[in-house]
Every structure is written in C-alpha cells, then in structure tokens.
Length: 89
Image 1 (cartoon, one colour):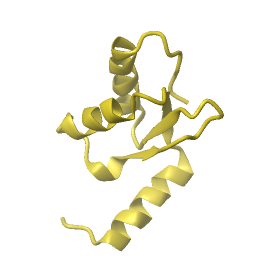
Image 2 (cartoon, helix red, strand yellow):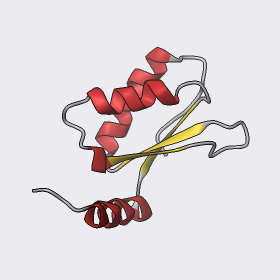
Image 3 (cartoon, rainbow, N blue to C red):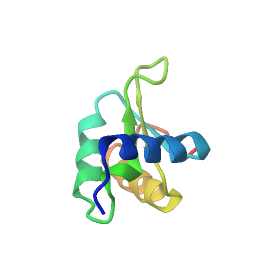
Image 4 (tube, rainbow, N blue to C red):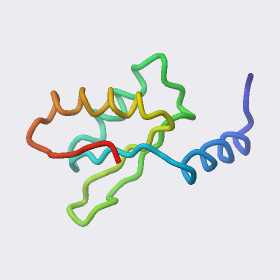
C-alpha cells in the first residue's frame, strides 16, 4: 500500500508521540545510523526517525517504532562506537 506524504506524517506522529524507542548516538555517528536504518531491509522508512542535536553535548537521537529494532540498532552501534554510553529509552 502506498501512503501519501500526509498519511506518512500522521502515521509517524502517532507512534512517535505514543511510545518511541529512542537511542542516543554521538555527534559523529548520524551518518552511520542512517546507513544502518536504510540497509536493514526489514525496516521501513516510516518506522524510524532521526532528530539532530537533541542533547546538550549535540548528540543525536534515533527513534524507532519497535523496541526489537531499537535494541538491534543499539547492539550494532555499541560495536561501532563502544566508548559512547547509551541505551534504549
């Protein structure tokens, strides 16, 4: 099913305001994170989001609809950057 831009916006807003599963990444890892999300074929673009400079240290936040996906992202991110402490919130 193809969604219109308006339907996509409304769908994402529903899950983002309900209970998104968030993972903070350091300021230099946003490209890695976006690539990870795009390369995971089981992950539709409408089921994740990215927000820049969400913390005082200028780190970024990835938001996921599903906790399982957020945990997989976190596991892979910890391998990519083990020094940046983060968790799924």
